[in-house]
Image (cartoon, rainbow, N blue to C red; front, side):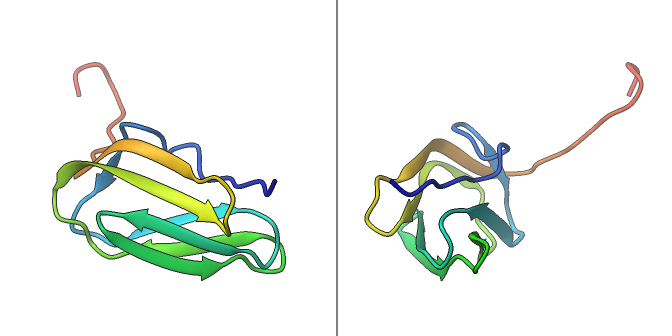
Length: 97
């Protein structure tokens, strides 16, 4: 079976930034066909000679939950459930932030 990896930050119940292009990347066998399905759309790409692949989703409207599926060829797909599109804030600092 072909191994497929995606970034660890992409999990069930994740929030994707709305109103901005979203790059998705991962790795699989070299020169493999990769299909991403999300919100009734599909994106197709091929992994390069080292097995890396990337697609960019167009800016998403806020909403969800939706499922995102990544498939290599005809192998079983990786599916991420209950993804939301919304505002993503990364904060750090003192406890009085």
